Length: 185
Ligand code: ADP
Image (cartoon, rainbow, N blue to C red; front, top):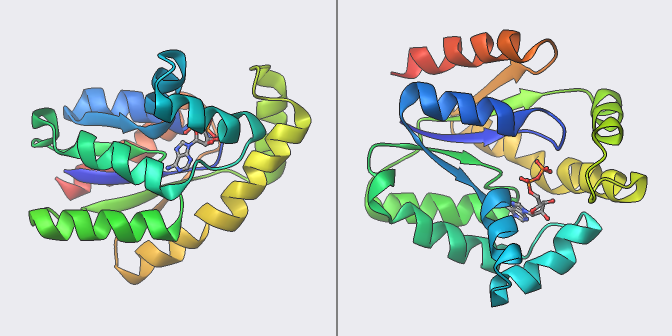
């Protein structure tokens, strides 16, 4: 099973992704985690990405596509994976489509975790991470609205799109996600 998991910052996407990959035995491909690891290791990519991440902006597509191409080629991805935080732009989605067409391994679904923006701001402001100043939060939400939301239409046109209500407890949302993914198996 190959899945794209889309959701705004603060939607609980990372938490749900973690639980879903464990349940279905998928590789967990989080570009946010990969970038944070690169930043901590002070690699060239990490240092370059840091400037964008700290400002709440998206990291340039070419960097992300390079990272993901390398990762998807690794052996643990052969049994399926969940893409968490990628693609985040139409250009990234197109690059992914080309990559997967070359390999003959199309996506099974693009799942949106849907949470209203007012709720997101509340959640993020209460979380208190270093990259969560009000200004950076606003910038990340705007990047989602402008650059990532168009993907919902993009995947809808490919008949891959499914939306999950992200309001409620972690367990409630997990049950909804499970019901949808079970149908894909
Ligand atoms: P969030 O906490 O917003 O869910 P992530 O942990 O997925 O975010 O990513 C943190 C930051 O890493 C993003 O704000 C962005 O700067 C960068 N990033 C992660 N994935 C991508 C991507 N696919 N394209 C561009 N930038 C990305």
